Length: 44
Length: 574
Image (cartoon, rainbow over all chains, first blue to last red; front, side, top):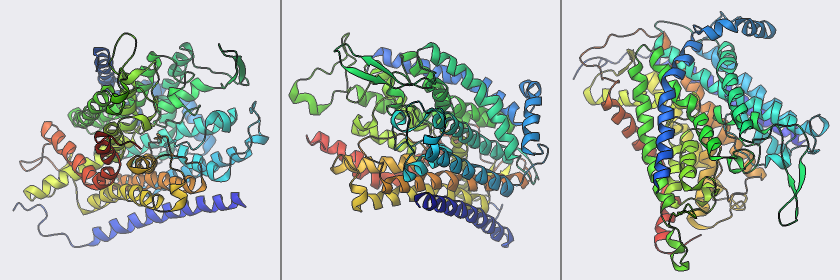
């Protein structure tokens, strides 16, 4: 029973890591699609 | 302090500085397969790819690279867990060790697969030779190779232009293991055996001590494991006493060799980075920033450990160095290493992500423990683990150019790559999540009875024991402060969570940054570009690391080592 619990914990960790990769992909895509800032590259 | 102590430190520094360039060049040539060694051993490498069904010519995007890395490491955790649970039924178990308890087995499996090597167990009374050799040592190789592979991917991200891929995880792992880790380990193992470290599969032996008492001497395949334990930044000892044990670290010479092995790959990779981005000065800047932070910490620890302990004044204990004694704070230290090598070893092992110890950090003076904790709290930027130190420092470099860009109102650039919102977001994710785990879990542990039950000391020292444990775990260092009974379900599971998060919560954003940078064009340097190859950038990097680390952790260390230092001055001890 303990082994099943530890396996479940490990799988949960793996699922969390995979979710984390997807979250990173989504975050970067959402910023990529946002309109560029007008201030970019312009000296003040 | 003694001149012998300073001489030892000077020799160590000279040897490290001498090895950076040749080894850095070799690693860079391994990364792009231009080394003659790669061409010579290519048939073995190709055979391994055929066996595994890997096409070495097929490169991966950062997402594919990350999934390969995660799957491989999760499989490693599962394999090491199974090995520990089944060891009683498997061969090479001369002491007939039973199955490791489930929570301890999970903690140990996560610990070694994440390159942490936190040990809630004593090796000589828990693990069979098979588990040590095919479980612990194998994961030491693979977790070390994983760190270097991630660093190689990030270096390619900086070096490539308009590319969709950052390399092939399986190829990087194979090359790092075959051409870097294995050859160095073979040589180091032979030197350790020559110096008296055991390498045997025979059972433990009974010995009669000089007083006539009977004693069991534990032994096993120690030398081979010792070499990779140090080189990979893993640090998990064959014995409970780790490198303080005479069978792991028998002489002052092996002590020096062990410290060199710990730093070897971390410092060399800075030069590899410089070569891969086409400007070695960029690598020397990172090396200089690491050296400055290391030197400040080392001087603090060495002077602290060689100064007389004020608590002993009333007992009239002689603590001055002489021909008869090393002097200083000798509690928890091996007589054959003294405060000199112990201070150097402690600073090296916490500045890197290794975590091997040759003295008990729990017995260091409060301000020394502050340095040891701070080294880890900076999250492996002072040399760090193989690979992880480099990418940790590069995260700070990204923040440094971003902060400098804000000051002058331009889009920041680093090595010709524009650092934009995406890269900064990923960098902050990596830099902020690890402290969140350290501080959050420490807060829980000092609040719940299960956490308090493991403490051996009260007051600020007890708090330091808990803070050190979660810092060590989340920074994937693995050194223990001692004084904390961590072999409980509460600590085994929460520390496993800290190690898992501390490793992958950083690696995934680093690979993401590598992928994004590889896709960018290289912008030519202009008058508005911040120079990143000179002393100015070293100051910026060190200052930023100190500010970020200081602001994040100052309240916590004020409750621990700083409060303990103030109490010691007032004559209080815990």
